[in-house]
Length: 235
Image (cartoon, rainbow, N blue to C red; front, side, top):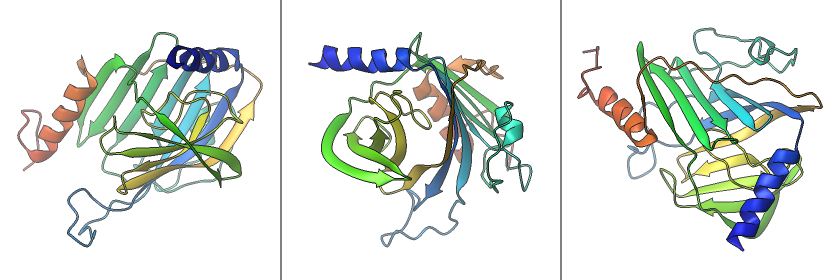
């Protein structure tokens, strides 16, 4: 049964020859360091990400916080015009690139002028698909859960868009992931979506530092923020 499921996922991805462009909003509900009442002293503002999928590759990229307002048509390069968003976040660069042809993920992250890069295999999230459904942003979605993330995670995906991708690092379901619920700490939800018939080129991001595994990538960022990494440049 598992082999059949994997075959169907690969088949739908390979046969889908269109380009998808959209925007996801990452909303922080509470911090992992919140008090017993879930109150965070300095809550993080929502972050806005562009999403670009074509020819079994995708690019999920934070809209720069260095500008107060950004025309997303400049990001998508192909004339797609979406609503202008404000983005405020700690990071200056936050990119997730997936290549489904070679089962590869690449991440680029910059915070406080320090670069972090990762290159690894796509994570096998071992999703459990339930019978629960919901309509989210106009799409009929099914619910899936996994424990192979930072926190117990719920994903809502739609088979109306038969690609096995989604925001951030999430993927592996028989339809585009419309919304992710990260253990009550935050949500990532699709805000705007456009599908066109052409196939577009998605280039692999250029690594700015030594590429490490995903585990080492996150460990390095955590150590840097805690001030224990030799990369740490602030006092």
